[in-house]
Image (cartoon, rainbow, N blue to C red; front, side, top):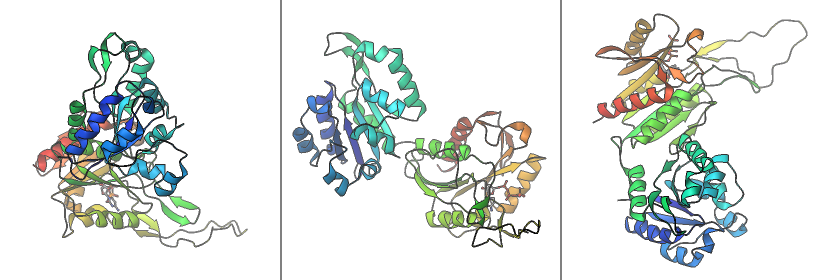
Length: 397
Ligand code: CTP
């Protein structure tokens, strides 16, 4: 079920750590390769030897172990996994994660990873119910971290209530669902996002106000439905979501090359605000004032249209979706754009300054397809992303 999947398992310091030994066994039985990391406190409850014997591999414990840094740096260790599972996730580890502390190997890996993270909290009832822990939990969930458990029950400390770590079989099921389920499981979706930067000279460029928020939200929503997402992004201010393949570019021409290299895909969603023009007379050196008071003249050349190129490519994805940023007669312009670009759907939005959409958290879109124009109410960009991902999943069934 999990054949070929790599799980980075971080074992925190709690009595439930003994259950993590069983979890390693279950992951291995399901075909996954477990790379274990044991915190200093975790090693008070289970020994490195038993962990590594069950995982059939070395257990990582110390950030400053130079041999490990030579073999595999902590950044690489944090990235070479399909899923990071923290079990047990103690109140202390959750606090570190919520505040971004990185003072040991486990917390550093958790801060450095670009993969999805699932925590299985385990602690005393009072500690779990404490507002500080609940605040940290809300922060972590807001960051897209998955949780499994805790369960209610008798606890090792003699109290009763929520705080018991989820059973290993439950953690295995949640991890399997995160890695292998959803209506888009087995599908590859390409997403472009963010602005492009078009150089004028080595230090100056032309850009636009796109934050990349809608593209990032879309990539996360497609990932959550199980898709493998290739996320080709210009220099956006919103960071890319975890658990997607990120390809960073600067210019429109680089974006086109990256997009074509990422094909074939089942669907492509072009949310990038690609610059229509680049500077044709880009200077090789920083342009200097010449003392005459004359401003330099910039010449422009048209950039390739990535959406149109993909729509007409022999490798065309089954579903090609474009966005249309308009400031007037939105539906009319967007309908014409759909025909011109040869895509299946256009998600049109009004980006006039008064709407606060470009760079904001909300979007009000009209979905234009062969069937006509469908107005969606104004909602958060996350909600637009979830709805659109759902529609993409339906279309690819
Ligand atoms: N797009 C693209 N490559 C370009 C320009 C735009 O792939 N060189 C894509 C965008 O990602 C978006 C769609 O085309 O999905 C429409 O972008 P938009 O800026 O609204 O349209 P333009 O092509 O720039 O058309 P116009 O200038 O007429 O508004």
